[in-house]
Length: 436
Image (cartoon, rainbow, N blue to C red; front, side):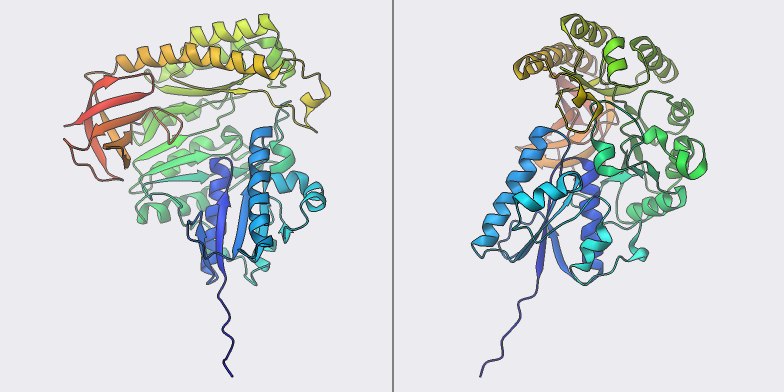
């Protein structure tokens, strides 16, 4: 009689949504592997029998994409191609009861802070000694670092507090330890992320300590770039700009989501600020650090935005000439404050307004990039693609900003290395360069 061989479980983690979700998936991957479980992230091999989907529940499109992915793997399970499907992340935090009713074929649903419960499904323990260690799902030369979780802000349009809970900072000591571990494994750039990075430290230290954190991280050997994302503008701690100015390894780059350029809409959005205050803040930052790259995001079609308010935002973008800009259309999210208001702007009008702002931004971006021709920049090489080495300057973040393209037939670069490059040509969103 032949002995029956048990096939060893192989886990594949699928990530939807933002960089914060990617960090959660990397933590999960590290914990599974630390417990001796064969796990991978978005593996293309067909031999994974357990699927974990880390979902996004932020806006309608993202929710639909997450649901489609769940259905795809549930279908694979019914065909016998996989044994188990687990769902975690923002969508299942927010809609767990509905999902259990609608898609009962999923083996278990978990929220955003249920990692120990998810690990139990694999008879695995949450290993505290792995805190600060994280297996990266991309090239090791850059890494996202989540400095806090959740959000205490009351923004009308945002469902993040419903999915991620209240604001919880990680300690400076823990984050420095993580940075040291990353640097030892080849990471040169840290991208600091949070739902609201400027709130950092208020819960732990009873005061904002983002500047102290950035100073401590900039002391870590091997970290050459530190980049700040998702800085809330209201009550912005200007000591952060002072640290940015004094430390050469902190990028002269700030991602500060302003969301609108009309004071009346900002009030409806419950942002706690005005257009005038936002403009004053941007001018103050630029006065302290001339040449800083400011990235912002704006929303079109929020309740209360008529043609006049939208025109205010157009004028705002025209005046402020942001180095980087992303525009989103308003999504009417249940259980948010804005859901109590009438969503009275048609989707096609929201999109037309977003397109109009991006057309203005394209010209601004083109003019700013033209000014870079003939100048030299330190460039971090991210990848090789379509005959080019593709990199970024300190003024550009991963995947959302300008890229520097270096002809691979003329120059050899190593992915993960810094090179000194001279800009030879520029379009709206790309810079062409030669290595010096």
